[in-house]
Image (cartoon, rainbow, N blue to C red; front, side, top):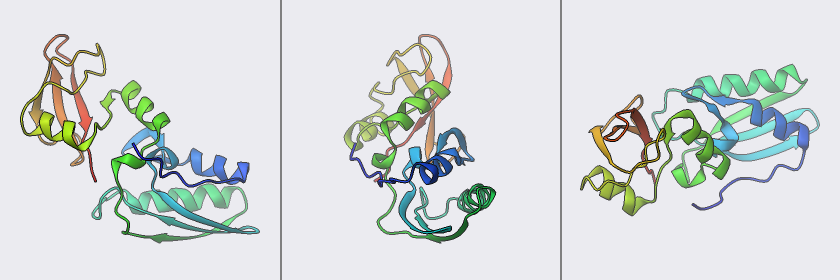
Length: 167
């Protein structure tokens, strides 16, 4: 994982951004997801640049609305720009975000090589979020969203999503 997290020194601003959750994965903040790419603070005016997890992500309008509402509640105005380059990568999910994914029941993304081995070659690398076994099988290339695959543990029989590696 490459640390692509932007540094926000203002504790209040950081707290506001950390309070905004990804609507598709509510245990992750937009900071955990790494979609906040730039912030400029001019008094009570906030300029943000955010990157979607993929260019057609339906949650981006909702996320922008949630950001505006969170800042407005604290007396700020916001200008939000959606940027597509550089493209978002699962490398941008923070370590905290990866741990929270697993606690929530979504296996966090592996590196690109392991991801291909698990999704294409069927190598048993994806760890069950319940019992931690790697005796798992892919049920479907697509899980609850396009960025996830559906897996099942062959030991405890628990179905779970695996967040695919995106580069």
